Image (cartoon, rainbow, N blue to C red; front, side):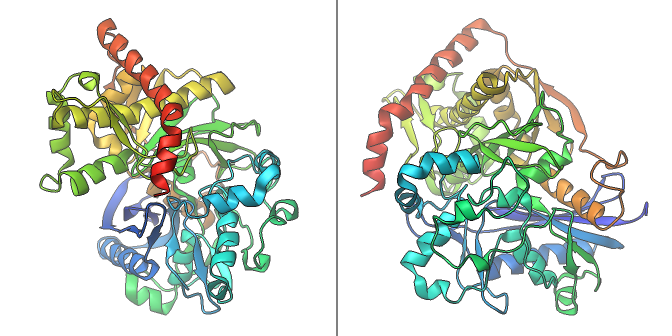
Length: 500
């Protein structure tokens, strides 16, 4: 058992990472491949599923060539990513990502006066990223010929498990929670009351299985593509932020953690189903607990956008940090709104758009970049404010995981604006770690998800202490108050621009 290797596949919207861990939670090998989001319009954001699988298989093969005795494989995935399959488990169209907002108007119109009722039952805002059955209803109306080809709808982890050799289409509770078709305060099962609003063949919905379920074994074809051994157990896994919560051992309602990749999320653990609709709420991997995510859509995505679309000649995140250092706290009075793909928490508006507010001739690129780092932190502060008002949560410290946690300047800015001590996980790949340990548990190498031998992610010795300089605090508090009031003022303008 001690020399067993557990594989965690973290399938995100901007990359797929494959990590191998041992019994003690030590990272043995890692490979990644960049993935592309196909953005055909302001609200259309898809992925090419066959290309995604090809890159996943390549990354798995790279890792499997470096380590032996891989005894399980499991997944953490960007959620929701809708995958429509035919009878041969082949995609009939691109995967529809959580950033896609095309069905927003249809969902709102369909629910009409019952919107609040549905929100109360599902415990999430009825939007495309938290009510994906509404997207299926929209597809049924827009493309009925496409929906006739659909035999099953699954999420990204089930798609990848099927490609590895599973014969069983399934969905885990952490992602069923974002369907808009389960009553979150109860056990995870499809709700006839919630499904009545959506006109599509409900038989295409897969059964809901626990995250630790063994859904199949690696077959001969997948073994040749990935280098895995035939017969290796395939475990269903979960959504990425749920996997990260499992990885850091989040079981306490008095603590939280931040995951930062393309999106930025602060996650709280709930021991009772006491939800706030401004958050994304779901089942925990741990039974009889729930997770509340203050989920912003494009925090890290902002800097990928700056590197690739605004200043492509730079294409270097570290250079963005250098620009920011050349500015000052408060970005010389400039404020950035990070709504590049609409926004989830806390405003829930697919029509929201990004902006720099306050631009003058005295501003330069340094100020614009600094404002971007600060603007994403102001959004996180809104989330902490809601958690304090709703659950009385007062944080002294916050663990940061994910690729964005490696940005030292950004982490320090967040510590200063949130006035919370930040620590960083030793591995940035918390979601892959959580997936690997869920897989190891499902394959029987641990006694269960509460096994005391299950490792959790350790933190670096480095700590980011919030700046107590009163002048800097005053600047950030002033800027935050302005930021907090901007969306209500600009909402109608954003809507008009998004509908051009």
